Length: 511
Image 1: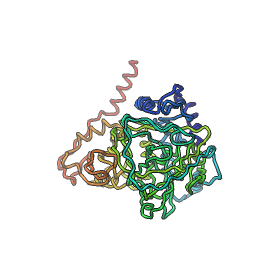
Image 2 (image 1 turned 45 degrees about the horizontal axis):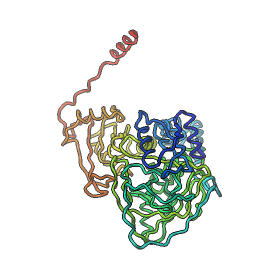
Image 3 (image 1 turned 180 degrees about the vertical axis):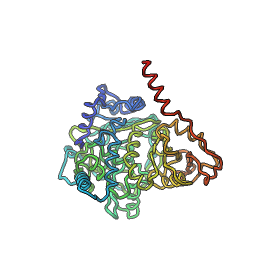
Image 4 (image 1 turned 60 degrees about the vertical axis):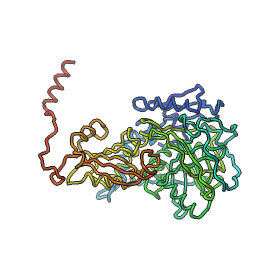
């Protein structure tokens, strides 16, 4: 299903009993975070929240704020336009694994898949709802002097709001020690200056004033690679940021797509309707016509970086200030009745856990093309995305678990994974207790573990050096003689199925 606005998605959530409206004014400074955090930690992820009157420095914003809209398995499936995330994964898997037809039935099945793909490619539109209100900014003169030091992290004051500036949006100050207000669900569009390839990513943005913000793209991200090419040439880098529209957009912005493959192709496929794109007002980038809010601008590689942070991050700790590029705003366009989508991150579980879980399920068929022995993968909430990964495999030869570890560490965001635990196919990796049982019962620590070095998440405060760290892999599978285990491996205790059925029948008769 394609949603033509975030408001339409919220209406669908409300009809499904998945949304709670909050009519009482709530402050964007900390109060909304506290309410949303409590909701996210309820069993199953709680409800989506629509804050109808968010306040900015005591003044009610013109834009309602939506949060936790993808914070459950059901809402995540609705955002993807599917009955369930598993169903979407099966459909994508059948498309990826399609083979040449050998009969009429298979031919028609393949034609059906081709018809589904016709919506994948984005198409251009002359205009769209995202341009109902247009506000342009004068470009500031290039800055050569260092930026001032970071503001007092306890100071929540800002300039007086002006129409259609950053200060007019209900942007959250999430946690007490945050360095300011942060846009937390921005879809950031950049383009490779050499190939013209477009990238859609998600990088938090700290608001500095009414027309500039920090752009926190980490050095391993695609947008950062695009940026380095502009820094090489000294040319201004065009950037476009949008919020809202179809909820599939923020999911695609965080999905582990191969570098160079347009995320809007995935969006069009998932929503079964081509994404209509419109050209920005002040640069040549394109954004979805049905976005709620668009922020256009540039990064000037000739000016110094500026400290961004602290920020209460998905690690559960604050990331401390580090220098990042400054995003200068040249225009803001939006719907007349735009909804501001937001999220918060912090000590898990949070909304991002459900987004990450959906990505793993959706891209599992692609992963199995490289590693056919993989049965399932889980990223427990306690691992805050990629810190901890459980993998179950069909083991058929010695050292296969280590092959999987090294392979995963070489794939995209998996390079940041600190700990990988590999178990046998009959272990439910989504049951952390079951995995820990295997870890304790089926390993000899020295024999069954491996340390290696590699890139680390720049948000990881525990590494000795920023972006550089070590990884630990543990083989908790049944050991083979060739792996150094000469003893007989004992069977796991299990009751006979006939006895289990007999006792089931006995208990049912007692009810």
